[in-house]
Image (cartoon, rainbow, N blue to C red; front, side, top):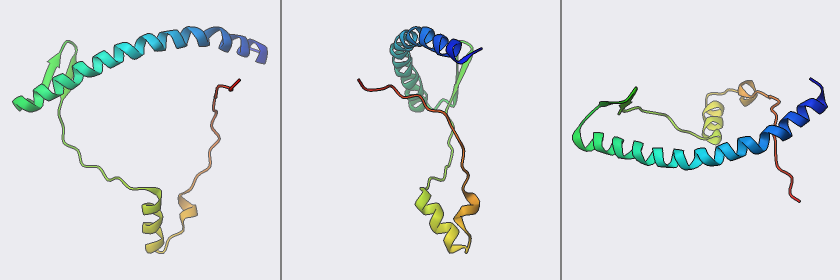
Length: 100
């Protein structure tokens, strides 16, 4: 595949994909409402798991630790460590629409 072929493929598929995403957006919104209703029903009735078709809805309690980069830096510095050993640099691609 050449760069011209890649550009042509991108330009050909992008509008089709955008149209499908727009359709999916409304469907996902409707499905999210149904899922929220199911979870609320489960909470109100003390149900931990419920089968809906080939899917199993379950309510689980999880404990997470949430902290910011600043919190992490404070912890590392308090322990006498160096932040640079935890930093990595990666190169990632980005596609942005130009404003005309």
